[in-house]
Image 1 (cartoon, helix red, strand yellow):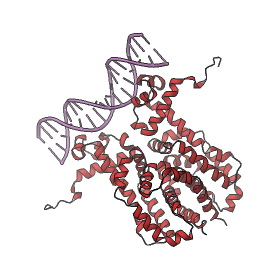
Image 2 (cartoon, protein in one colour):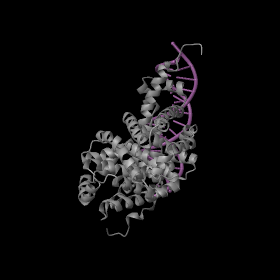
Image 3 (cartoon, protein in one colour):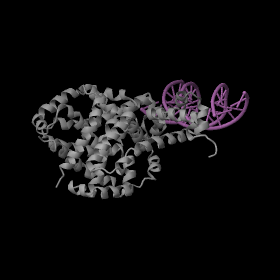
Image 4 (cartoon, protein in one colour):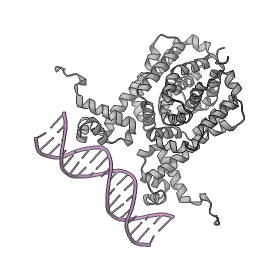
Length: 210
Length: 210
DNA sequence: GTCTATAGAAGGATAGAC
DNA sequence: GTCTATCCTTCTATAGAC
């Protein structure tokens, strides 16, 4: 690297990538049109192929990046030196705030994964879940005991936490339809959820106390 | 109706409909191909158009039916004369069992709704949520008071229940990837979830007790 | 009602000039 | 690197025979 170009210096590639992200998030892999992406990026179709060769490669680049960003949001939870309760509060606040800024992301990622599970495998290949798992158990040994949490129930609890956080965004389309009917405001509901979710989960755990 | 034909007598239409349901569930509206549907139904493309005119109409017919079936699964909960606790247990058992039999349905419905919210509006038009809402509050007045449940928190609780039930199926693709890594079996996890979910929610409610 | 054949449009990808 | 023009495949949809 003798030149002084940084990786972010390729403005056209960035514009394409950003446009592609928006179009793919909205329409999905199958519904997205290269023409749309080109228009949104302010260039022509040929240039898309010059930079990314095929639609599939362009999609893959976008998907790896956004799905990765989303998974990374879970990481701090496992690292920080907090009590279980603090971690739960921290997680909901962080994660829901992130999705407020990227409301289409959850539905997009969930859908494309079901459509093509191979893509997520590529992403998860480098994550050692077993290690994280062991670490968690070790870190919170006493609390797991206090709350009467068996190893078997850990996947249940963790997926429940993820569910409570992600579902409102994944189901945004229906919920907004129903909420309208009930006079409930979606944004206010989400804002309120950061705290409700933590209280709910912590309450459920406390009720297991031996 | 003087003839003795029943509505279900149109075998070809049924075959098409069933094939379409399977292909749309797997590939989504955009990814589905009329040729695939024709092949799976054992007929040719022209006949699809003879029966349903366009791909969009065929999709709409399928979507209205399967999404309707899914929503209907929620209905018994509101009708039955059970305590809140019993309703929660009943719901998780019924709903998760239904999804075990139709594992692709949640992801399919959620995705297509986000892609085209107008479709769900058409479906929800005839459901009076306000009325159901009032009925619920009236039926469980005492319990809401006992568990310290404000009106404001009802949407939070109801979406939380839906989330816990639906999410594992909507996120099946990722979860199976992670579970594999951890030596957890997805089907066993789901079976276990029917009871775990009910205990978890009831526990959370009890912890709110005044 | 069901088929074969084909029209007609759309979309991904490439050639070649600048 | 970027553009215009165009190829080629794929897909929805229809015409018309039986």
